[in-house]
Length: 230
Image 1: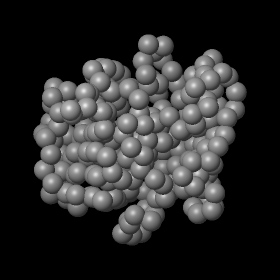
Image 2 (image 1 turned 90 degrees about the horizontal axis):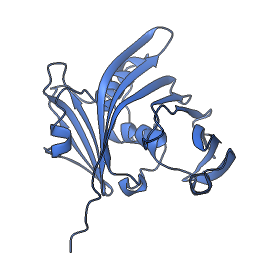
Image 3 (image 1 turned 45 degrees about the vertical axis):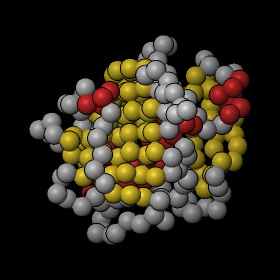
């Protein structure tokens, strides 16, 4: 279920008013990557949105996102991603620093705010799918063991492969079991801080739609775990 309404970012996100978002990056990407003026719909990008609680650590991550498509086209944005309890937030601001976009996933509902006066090019859940492909844990066995090697399994209709080196995730690929769309999504990781919960650099090559996202994390702020309502 998707609801469109005004939302207020949490205090942790409001404290960082200068960061543009993954949302702005991906919306521009969708508008430029396709040679035709096609209308995107929910069936174009297969995948199942997983609960925010799947990401175990509550925190706020300051990032730089660079989107590339074609031979020479690219654009970069600053970004903030926050996970708190059962809520995942992607916040994007205009170049002048005002809030342009916000996507909030809470449970299985998506709340969207768009202050840009422009229609969003692709459904918000497309952006959330890329976020979870990059940062969520996928194969419990590789996460639990933390032993170098190649792990594979099937999750939500996709064949997932993870490669660990030095106890850290190095590469992850996604292939549809039904072959639609053909090809694979490949995500590579570079860890720059041993004490961080996310890698310093993530590169997602989407072979299904022909674009690349490079996400560089510059700051991690952990949040206290949210307490359930009694």
